[in-house]
Image (cartoon, rainbow, N blue to C red):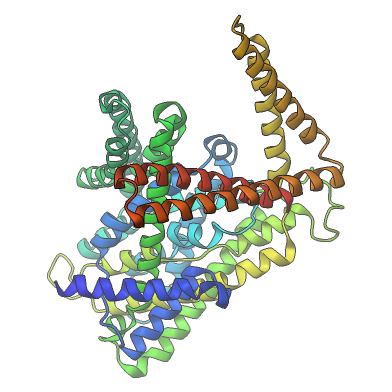
Length: 534
């Protein structure tokens, strides 16, 4: 009950912070971590212990699943070579360099423990990456690389972490055994994710189009995949990622429109809540982390944390500069000195925020080895890890939006959206022209619909002339604004009819749902116009 009360109070604080977010002009994760740090120092609210189990088994599966669900499979395949270099090659290189540095500089760190530290802070975090970059105007290619990297690097880092922890607790380490273990754990996770996806595909027909049952099943799947894979000794991260991608690939033909809308709204809310709570709670961990560290050691450990942060940035910059991530066949004249490839390189190099997965891995480090001896450097590992996370979130996370707005990377989204709209209109007109009916009413409707679609197609195809396109959008926006006013007029009449008791609640609710759907559609249309006109 006490923990529930803490969560309620922290949730209230989360709502207050969200309400002032727009005025402060800060990315929500940055604002929440900062607020958590302030709350931990002032101790205004009792902190909630962040257990590794809570992160790995409750927070991570739905966030990974949502990110995988929203990943474009064709784009992912196209950029897979680059993603794999960052998610596997860069992670192992970073782990090795950090281990070498930690073993050399920090007293008392054995090689296995140094590799543990490297594995903990080597992967940029999926939660941090998707939370900070989701609302930023990034080109699709960059978004795919960043999200793909954050999806896969957790798996490679956690596997390296497990191997290093075994070496710490047992005193035995073999690179050959570790390599074989990495392959088996990865393949096992991929197989489990794929098998669960196929099973759901076969069982889906028994839901009979029930949106609530479908949504509930999809909610449970990431937790089931992660738990099963981890229980069998395989990668739960890869199991959830592959499951999410598999279901996303089949979602258009698998789920009904009602189910997709319901799932979309649910995941939007639940991911928003999880991200908010987890970053706020992360910032509140400071008192528990420093409780076993002497005050005289804190400045030195903060310096080590800052030094490791600098090293992480330098390694990422170096790897991306040496590896030909971006083709140079695009025009170098665009943007002057900052060509599109250079803009992408700068953004990708600065997008290495660490987060809750690294802290959870540090918290999961055992207190004792296989002989029962206390691992004395555990508190040091935990504190330095926390400092690195805070530096990456506050320094990189706070400056990344400004950096993107300054260099303004090019994005082909508008042209792609226009091409898709034209394609859909052409298919629709072709369908109507081939439709055969002797009914006069049907023929009249066909003629009216065909003329309307032809006008829309003409306006889209001639939208390169800015004045025509702008006027067309202005007209549409004015029309939809009038529709909103009309809906509001009907809603006032609906409320009056309900309050006077002239109509039953069942009829009122039915009409209310129609109005809600209508206004939601209008708002979506207006948002699309605003986005397309930018």
